[in-house]
Amino acid sequence: MRKVGPYGVETLPQVYAASRDPAALVDAPAAPRACRHTLVERARLHWRRTDGGDPAALAEEFLAAHGLALHDLSRPTPTHHDTNPCGAALYLSAAAGALLAGAPTGAPEPAPRVPDLAVVVYDHGPARATPSGPPTPWWLGTWTDSWTPRQHAAAVDAVRAAIGRGDVYQSNLVGHAAARYTGDPLPGLRRLGALPGARYGGVLTGDGWAIGCASPETLIEVTDGHLITRPIKGTRPATAAGRADLLASAKERAEHIMIVDLERNDLARIARTGTVTVDDLFAVRRWCDLWQAESTVRATVADGLGLADLLRATCPGGSVTGAPKLAALHQIAALEPVGRGASMGALGWVAPGHIDLGLTIRTAAADGERLHTWAGGGITWDSDAAAEVAEAAAKTAPIRATLAGR
Image 1 (cartoon, one colour):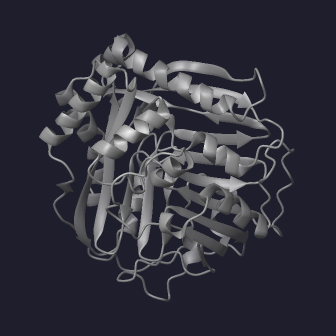
Image 2 (cartoon, helix red, strand yellow):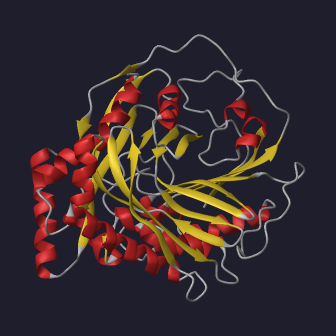
């Protein structure tokens, strides 16, 4: 385990001058809006799989050591004081989630500088103005995909064959692309948060890496002893015809309900018996130029539930793995050519009495040389390989355009 003390969070090395004030730029997804301009980093934890240990337990222990006790989420919400830590940004990679589930962690990561766990604790400080200065010239090169459309289609066919054998009911396949850049990547990563439907818009940065999120999907939210997850499954173009087609699609509805059942089971492991309910089943929401189907699953927190057990039960998210989850994770590890990196994990805000973590779909990452994006979709027996390839392209198109400045 590597613990890193307080330092500037805006630290992609070739971009930032020492005079820039990082405390004014805190923009972690789901951070309290009233506090965002007064947050000052107190301490941070970075962890990678090679460090060994249990990332969920490490996160809970690290937060408790810095005044954020999250070992019993059923307790009443404490009063928010400026003299206490405000909370913490928390990021957990998809590979770390697979590790928690007892599954293979997949192919090598394309952006290995991004840690598998990052926890950044923030205190309150004086409000500060965002620094200004001339914009850094920005250039983004051509995107190179980690697999060709033909290879992606072949993986879809492999999943369909596994479904035919009874190995899985559904698996999610994710592709990756990278592009070289010069200049400051943070303005582009920050712009992702302004995309329509980006419920978890924001950034998290560290030494030589940055994550920008435009996710619409709630992985897990805990408020006043209540659990909420909002799985998203089913996509169509955001037109009147696309909405009607999504609502009428038996394939999309079956895929969606399968994941809702998986999420119900995940919450049942950490909820009071008999409290799991489903609201707004297959509600159609908009993200950029796409319609997506979303449901809301609720439950009451079981007595004594802590952050570590919460992460173990919900990570990685069912909508980006498949069902059964463990079998789908084994298949994902065998088929996907590179790791999922910053995508398909968890990113958000944690504090006593309130946890709000988004699932890192519609997410990009920067290392010192390249930007990275990921996109995919759930594969069922009724999936058409060409349609699945096109759907993944449609999901990543707004991300790439935003990063390019269009």
